[in-house]
Image 1 (cartoon, helix red, strand yellow):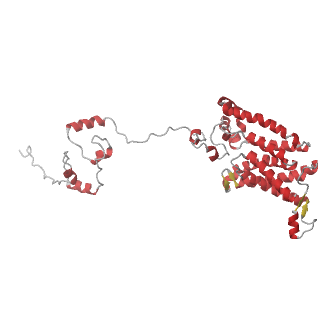
Image 2 (image 1 turned 60 degrees about the vertical axis):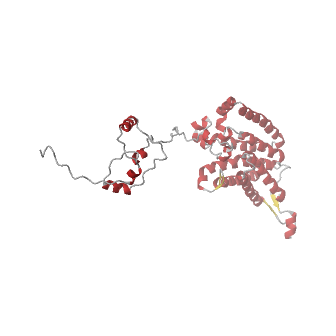
Image 3 (image 1 turned 90 degrees about the horizontal axis):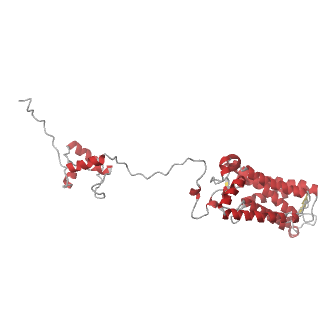
Length: 374
């Protein structure tokens, strides 16, 4: 009998908890004293008033005890067959990166994102040849720079042949009209624009896909200085555009990250390179080309510089004093040319392309200098 009817063990004393007293609508399993002590130190239970009764949240299940009702258990078995997953935002589709930004990500309702990004190098991957020749065409822009430099050498060649600017600027204007018309047509007809980009994409920046081609601004700047400035100032302005701008772009990309930034897309390394090349270009032109191939009656610099008459009278100098010539005058003009080239390359004039601002500002700087000291 003792083995068949064993004496039950000592009963464990349980106590009611605030949770069981506050809820009278459902049955809860008894809780022992050690468990009650643990729950007293645990965080407060999650309030169930904010969620409906049939919520399947894991936090809510953890906060309340399981019901032993057969209906509740049947419902729990039916829902347990579907694994609950926490709510997560659907991740964006992953795409393989090719080193370029997405054109759609650059688009902005303000339609001024082309001004907000650096023009060097082209960042969006809109031109196919830029993706295939990333170092040669996209990063270093070798074809574009070669065209840029060749115009300076061609201008110097025409000068050595004695060609007058009056016979050059009509040709520049004649080339400007069809090129600008073609650029307008490619923006009007998308199919023609795609064909244009495939053919001449190596000479373009991707900011010019939806904008005007830099050749238009180049021709406009060259035509302006050769049409309205004296011969030596006009030729020198084209040389500064051709060679100083290329030097600033090249050295700015190579060493601009190690020097302070002057403004967006312009670094101290590029500005110094433009100034140095400007000094060398002016020394070569006025120190070698002009003496060898002769002066023109329209030249503003003839190898001498002089202080203005009002300044000489104010400091008590006679007519022969206050003048310099030879290498000293050539050095001063060269230094001023380098400064003008660097400053015109940095200045942002109403957002205009630097292919038109560099020659015009350089021409104005040289013309004003020679008007005062020439």
